[in-house]
Figure: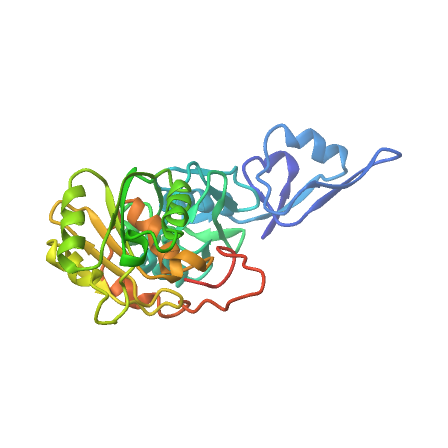
Length: 338
């Protein structure tokens, strides 16, 4: 830092807070450390008795924290995300819509490995609502080498690493299986749960069929709704019992099975497949009917936003995939699935 005359300080960065005292009216910081002096500030500073100022020595290879924060913001801010004003080198990002929050994790980690930079986010691949806070960006010092920000731009190739994807799938078919429901021996309590969960993502159940046990019955029902809806959900018959035929029927209907089984509790017997046209089909285990949060709640936002899941995505759920069964469930504000 160096000492210069106040009249010569326009455009310079202050090294420390400056207190203004107006007897009987005000006492407190008038200018904060890191403030960039403007022409309008000069009379105020002189009235405070500041004829000389300590300022940071800036050159073409340095950036003020606010300028650096703007670059970080541009690197982060993708689709359907709004930003705050920059303050003390910090910018916050929020969701503009309800949707799926996604992160380029590899690039985020690489950027956060660069000294004196930071981007903090909420967990990715999760549902967010309009107005939810997504991330905060800033640089640590008041002045930073410009090369470090150039490095981040090269990492991302000017492609934002954070996005909120809209929910685009709008209709669903539910295939209820099981002789006990088909013959009216018990009430179907599964379908109402599914309808309510889908409603939260703007999805309407437009087809609902209840079928007797047997691979041929289930396959026929699935084939009858293919092409009519954006997703197909099959309930019942998902265990490994000999008479549980739903997984076999989904495969027989032509689906490419991504996974039958997931390292998540509750929800280990979950099945996901896709048809040639991209339509997802799911086999839902019984826990979805009675548990507050299951594998279905973890994958539904991603599937509804048309993110195609792979086997590796399910493997990754193993860490955090254990629901702790809290007496009072707070999902999604807990560790489940994260």
